[in-house]
Length: 270
Ligand SMILES: Nc1ncnc2c1ncn2[C@@H]1O[C@H](COP(=O)(O)OP(=O)(O)O)[C@@H](O)[C@H]1O
Ligand SMILES: Cc1ncc(COP(=O)(O)OP(=O)(O)O)c(N)n1
Image 1: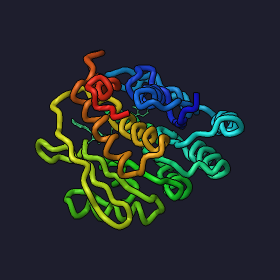
Image 2: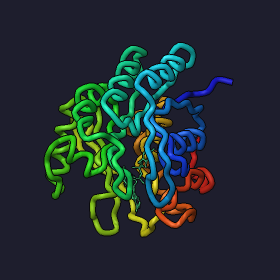
Image 3: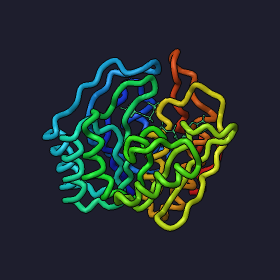
Image 4: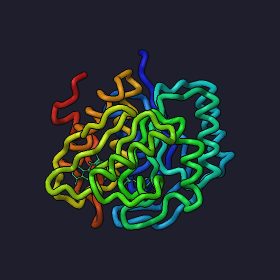
């Protein structure tokens, strides 16, 4: 049986709600075979991050070379990369293997405030990784770090998206989870030519652990099966909306999103 394949280059979340665990569950739900290169092991639960154990850059390169030598991912995403050595290793392999169906989720800080990207590594993201990206998916605080501007109005959100496409991303999505728009939770898209919104309803819930990982993994899965970026973004937004609406009550902190809600609700068109 021929299947489409997607690769996540990201950190492990022992709690299962974010990171590679979230990405692989999302790939599976969207009928895509999932592969992973682990960048860091985190000791994490719904209450927060208790420890971070990075993999060496050599270890990351080795995983990527093993995948690249044998399996051909149809799309690739990056999540938590933790430091500039790992960013360089990931960008090098992505370039060498010509993995140009690339989604970059520039993960920086976990809910609860733990640092998932060292401070001096944001420049490496801009220099080495973002120029390779088909889609980049910062939340508002991440877009602020990457652009160096405060985003406190709709105009500034657009300006930031233009700057990020200027750095080299084909498409920038500035996500709306941290953007206070009353009962809306829409994400702004800029494709270098036009702006549009992925419309969503804000769900009043604490169970939002892993929203960004799940959303970017859904985009990656859809690109892997050959959807256009616009189609992939549309489906990913429906996927995350369902995953948040039916968020899972687990643990005493921020529970995870529900990866199977989209399929169980009968939204899957395939
Ligand atoms: N409370 C919510 N209700 C509905 N959608 C949400 C909610 N919070 C986040 N989302 C959606 O989840 C996705 C991830 O957004 P965000 O939470 O901003 O990312 P991150 O997890 O990287 O901080 C976006 O599509 C966003 O609109
Ligand atoms: C291992 C790991 N990777 C990424 C994150 C951040 O995930 P995100 O989807 O932004 O969700 P929150 O942490 O904000 O809930 C993570 N926590 N762990």
